[in-house]
Image (cartoon, rainbow over all chains, first blue to last red; front, side, top):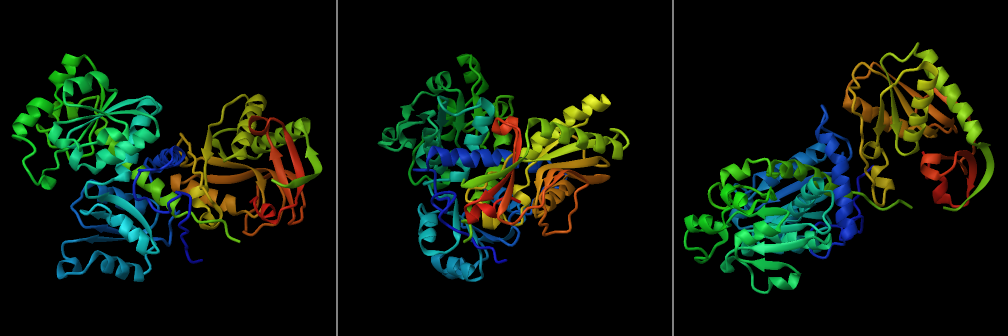
Length: 317
Length: 190
């Protein structure tokens, strides 16, 4: 039997390009599936045969540790065959375009393309041109849907439900694809979202997405059930958005002292990698309130869920 | 679902008697409850297993561990069949190593679900023995699989189907022989 992937369901788009516009039922279905799949990660033999015969290529045009390893593990746990592509040491350095690289890989009969790219929209570009299923593993400052989903799963596990939850996203919103995917996902499941950062790091007009904006981190701590603390994406800063990292830590860093002063214990999420002493104090990252490592575990489960759901075809005949 | 009920093969009482006999047979053939564990296959196999557990306690006065198996990820028709795969939680909180496992399902048909369940169980460890208990065997095997404990043998034609309805899930206890009026439906059960 030749594995044949159908692209028109069950994730209605046939691809996972972003959480923008994804209906709440679809998000919930992914989270439910991920929850069921988590059990596999606890087994002595952490493998099921579901994606036998399916080949996945991980196209990583940008550095990544967690996401790449997480996707790779998810693919292996489901028995898919996988190929890893990184920009360094590939033909991209010889001037090959994204489309040519992808077409060549597809000509080798690959069913699923996982792509991380510095340009926003690169996954959409591929999805419009390739037969393969495309999964966005982060495109510029646009979206990082699997990160958004794993944050949702972690919050749901911790609080039982997302609806009505108050989540503050703190830090470099302007350069963060994680923030965008979180906003779309959280809003779809009817959480309240607050963004907190210096004015230079909050995109203008973001209130139109139905989020609150604040510039005092103490106010965000006093309000929120959970804080999603973002790293400063210094590699994407093309101007001086901050006086200094030291000053950022003084005014926006999540410290024990701040949490104690607010007499609140919000749950702490962080997409990683953590810059200790910049956006978050070590003691907070390692405290009982932190679910940072649960996020990593949930990341594998969510990626497995997405792979399973996208490779399910139509009924034959 | 378009189908027509042809015969009611069992009602509440009938099902109770059949399950009671199955429970007795399981205890007898395994010489007691030592090392015994029940694993129900989703969906209705789980309820059949729970009933057997209760009956075994009544008869023998001891508890056997019970687990739930979801075989969706192990099916050989995974890519052919599911519009919206519903992967549910496999929940087996005992060590399957060296256990005598009774795999429980409601209807045995092609044997493909049982095959998937065997693979799934083997991935969890190395049971000493696996036996298969089913409420109804309707024939038409496509794989060399033979049940150890059978509630009812019901010879069927391909166009017919056996529907087990259970109080916990369907609001009544019944085993029905139905005739599908929809061809796709006829091939649904396995």
